[in-house]
Length: 103
Image 1 (spheres, rainbow, N blue to C red):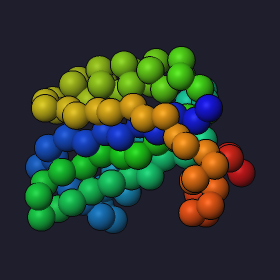
Image 2: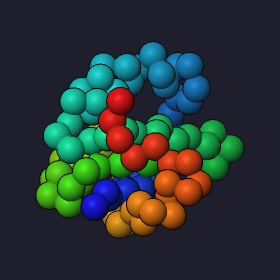
Image 3: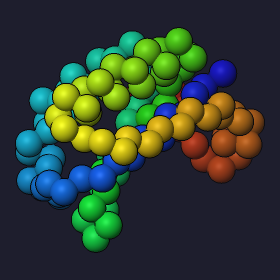
């Protein structure tokens, strides 16, 4: 079973290339999280939101990471953090070309 984590929060900071440069070390750290298959970084400058979509290979690691990440975001001063965990329907996702393995 795979688990999808969706996180978003109000972000009144930098976006695009500036964000990529500023958070490169954080991205490298997140890439090494236990159970993480991949993360897609999300941002919407028009609505002042940022976040991510994560795919994990087990329930324990997705929950552990959500707890860790929420604390980290709060330490950065973020509030109104929204997060949801979903089970992934792997057979249907495979039909629609979802890559569910870490390369």
